[in-house]
Amino acid sequence: MRAAGVCHGGRVTSSAAQDDAARKVSAPLGASPAGAHDHASAGLVDDFVRYLRSERNRSEHTIRAYASDITHLGRALAAHQSIEVPTKEPLRAGRAAHGSFEDERAEDERAEDGSAEHEAVQGIAGGDLDAALVAATLVDLRSWLSAQSEEGAARATIARRAAAARTFYRWATRTGRVTADPSLRLVAPRRRGRLPAVLRQGDAAQLLDVAAIAADDEDPIHVRNRAVLELLYASGIRVGELVAIDIDDLDLTTDMVRVTGKGSKERVVPFGIPARRALRTWLAQRPRLVTSDSGAALFLGRRGRRVDPRQVREVVHGLVAHVRDAPDVGPHGLRHSAATHLLEGGADLRVVQELLGHASLATTQLYTHVSVDRLRRSYEQAHPRA
Image (cartoon, rainbow, N blue to C red; front, side, top):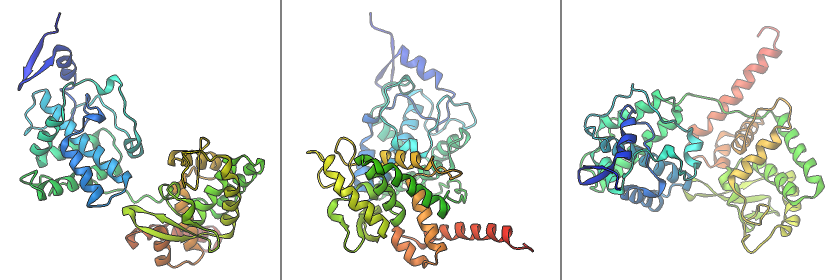
């Protein structure tokens, strides 16, 4: 026997779906709308992704994050419409929400999930998402961000989603997909000026000693891990840049490596003698892992494929855990540490900017704050009249 259904604007919604939708009536516009599967992305989002990739030359990480953010917005609006709440009158952010919010890293890395949490509201199709995005108002966007804030989403996540919305609507307005840009006066909360966690120079030395000791067993993975840590700390490159390195990008005669950074910008970065030695040892062991899937990748996993950023993060966190009293840092923490130690050693700020591949000197100046903070602490501990 067919379940009873009700027609909503030409679409039949099952009674089960109505019950699930009804349970969502109290959810704010910014709550993660259920029933939104990753494969059901809107046509506008697909076009936006192509624009980011082909015209803006954004990194895959940024593209994934922005696509996720705009899809999140479209689903919130479409789910709002599917329970027959007028689009122009967004739900109040102060009402209780039943969804949960992921932090920025989980948002960017989450896998497709078929759990019941994502299946409460049925029938949100690409056309619904397109229509919802086109019909959005400034009030809708503010409600979307406000609800996330009240749910406890990180400021960085909210700021990124606001930036994604502004970028999306500027593009949509310029290309005639939207008649008026609703994001012109959209303001996100300021990010807190948080200093990055960095290793002390002694901690960094101990970390590399731990990696060297582990590599003494000549297990190719342990040898690789040592080379990975030495190169990350010596060069300050990003983990995404590291895993993309091919053998031909490495020059062991000049101790330089070519990497491709954000916006597909290439730069050449130097490294030191310890890193060169570790890389030579790894290259001697690399053939033990090579398979038909290896290609030209410099760093390989146990199965012979190019190593994944997540694997590198696990390696760094695992080895840092063996350094007593050291902060729990990952590959990006090694990048912070390398920059800080360069500046503490007297390196010019512009040189550090070039090494790190920062488009703006203001980004590099963050590390001067770390150095000054350490200088202040050392002064207060050592000077008799501090």
